[in-house]
Length: 444
Image (tube, rainbow, N blue to C red; front, side, top):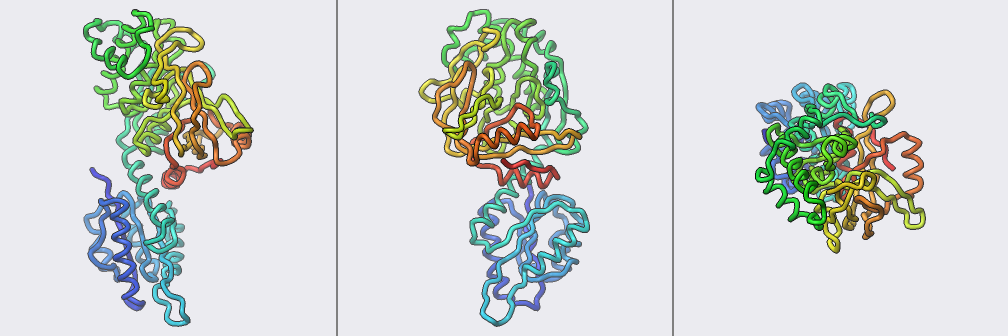
């Protein structure tokens, strides 16, 4: 079913209806400019009967509830009686203050509605201002994106391919927790099953995968022939599994199995899957894969997945790095997606490049508290124009706030060592998503 945002403009006819009508028309135009799928009434909802008739047959994924004028708690109660999803409460600015009549009294209506939502235990966002104000439009846009993402997560299937290595338990997940909090479905397969499938393919069956890999990368021809062919086999095994099972994100075991049992790393396979639109995390980090999927669906592009490994107070930067699974499309244009070897095992193919610069970046992680509850890590900045920092793939982010304090505080807060770097500024949208899911945010 398609995403359905609904505009609910309520009021009573005893206030200044000319002012309310003006705000109603401007609000409809703004909302449909944000998302053309908005369902809007043909007229202001100035009675409970009007509200009930409008809501009949609707199944909203987001309600934007606006007090065009004051309206008592019965209006919000009627919405809550029918609907349990996310709500954005919108108060209009009083249009004229001239010592005369109070034209809208929208703010008092908002207090009435919010008090009712609090009593119901509902989760809701809030914005104050006229339809023309940028902050209002930005808040609406963030809530729409968050609500759409929340709905889409309900059809997400995540695959855990193998188990986390010893000492990497932070990436493990229970299927019931993923389903109950995020709506995502988790399935599992042993890494050896895909390794066995890969070993069974002929060279001819994998030709297209080898050609695709060579076209997307630089220097694959320098990798020993056996490793090139085994990479193509592994790529086909993963791609077939993802396609057959409708997988949107994977958390794959990587070391030591793919070195000891197969002889070729999975790094480059995960890189190519990320460019294919499948969020692919290594070291079997399921919450890392979920973080990647969220970032990819917000930005429409692959995200970087890696460890914070270096801090430069002078430049106010944090360097994120990993062994070599970054998407080829993230590579610097002057080098392209260079192929190298795994920095520890010295076997390829693995990606070996610095990432391109982009002016706006969000660092994000779906994390866990010590009691198992969820939390979000969030900070923003700029991805710098920097060459490869270490063997593997790397990206250097200049943070808006002091990089040293971000590192110190997030270490003290016990965050997991894997983060994603997303193109664009998405903190407002991720905050809205967290609010809808009932998850606290650690903003640095």
